[in-house]
Image 1: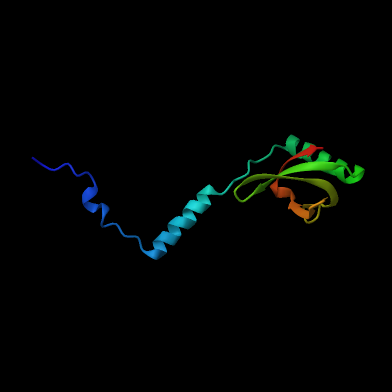
Image 2: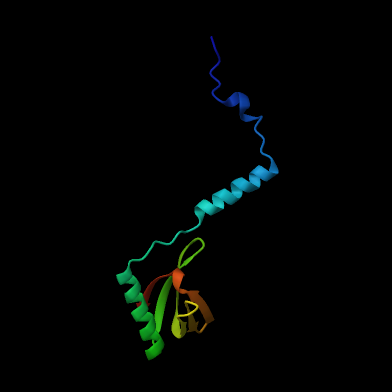
Length: 110
């Protein structure tokens, strides 16, 4: 009668070289990274209006933006909009934050 070992014969003999292990870690981290959805033109226009209104009226706004591992929210008043370099400067009690247009997912008036 044959022994039913499955893959147990080779379990103790597996070995990964350090270079391969580091590459596997990098690949896993890359797969875990957040990829923001592409926004339609109407959503971009709505977000732009809310940001511009916050800048002109000095009213607070809550921005949802894409970070490396998922969406994040931050709040404050838009201090400056730079259309040439495509970023906004958001000021709050915690300090100032520069957010590129390409990372902005949503804007809510507070």
